[in-house]
Amino acid sequence: LREITDLPVNAAMAANESLIEKVRRCSLLQWLLEQSSYAAIFGMAGVILLLLFGTQILNWYWPVLLFTAMFAIGCYRFLRSSPTLYQIAQAIDRRLGLHDAILTAYFFRAGQGDIEAAQRLAAESVLPSIDPAAASPFHLPRTAYTAALLPTVAFALRALRHGGLPNLHLRHTM
Image (cartoon, rainbow, N blue to C red; front, side, top):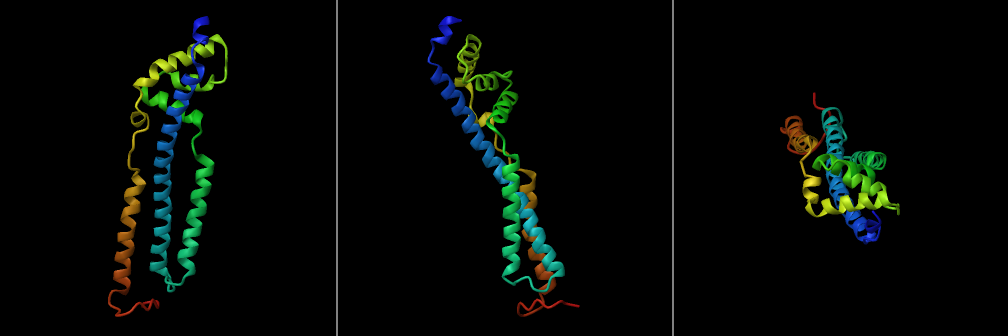
């Protein structure tokens, strides 16, 4: 194991951390799409409720209030549950069946002993065969379908409620 410690440690660590960072960016984009669709669902639900029960939907403060609330909720969820690099390394190993090669090399990235060097060497031998797209496949979240459907529901409600009116007076119809 002495000759393993003489290998370029920085190259193996950089390649491993580069892979983890690429997969993290893909995962964060995926997570951002999911959270954005949640925010769109709640925002459109607010618009639908205003269409059903409100009489002043076109006042400037309602869209501002809905947008601000959804933005605040999205920021809170992002800060609370975005994945760490350690969790990303776990996910890579799990998805690709690498038996903790990437995770262990990441965990021991600062160590200088023989065991740490052996782990880095094992990870370095696996790294060239890993495709970041396979480690973090893109899929459209189910919430995106709901988020795409709700504007249609809102437009239909608006047409049903105010379709017979020649102008946009949103007085309560009886």
